[in-house]
Length: 250
Image (cartoon, rainbow, N blue to C red; front, side):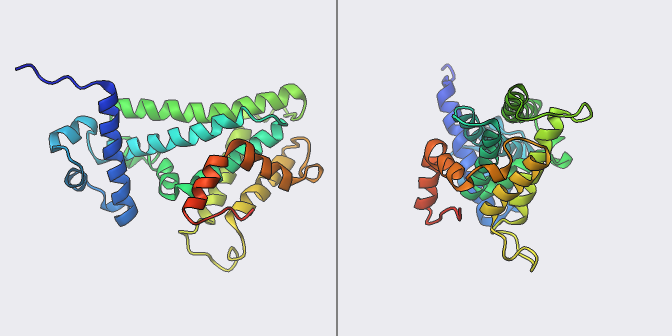
């Protein structure tokens, strides 16, 4: 008897079932508790089938990270459709990153997991290549907004500063603000009064003002700008937050 041929759509759906199950384990027990045996026990597939998809725990973690990055990329790419100033598009990228973290806190933290050498060095070359491509595509959205700003004269960079440095500074600020003000992190007294949503917008403006990206924050009605993000770009995600019994404090 010839082996049954499985079409690509079935393979993708099967792998997604495994990824969903792995994420459930992480949500319940933490990343350290995730094992291939626990995954096998939770899905309706044999151990061999699971290993046909993932070479080991590290490969599974990078696959989870890549899946999370793909979801984040979909939000970022919407920003390019926004009818507004380049500065507000960059602010919308920061807003999208924060919104993703609010909706999917476990996925947000997993995005950094694939960059840990103990994980990245043990995953498959295919998974590594996929991760690198997603990384470049995500940054590519920021680069496109930066190029738009430079061409419009809304941003001027000295010769010593590269667009890559601009993109990295904004990303680092967003990641740090979200990670340090996450609901999952114990708040010290210096941070107890700070709200993640408000500080992402506030610190984004501090960075963009420092770069001289025009118009500066004082020239825009931030409430109006953020409301446009909510209504024109991310209405579905805002609604999804509502289903979770949560809302943005903005």
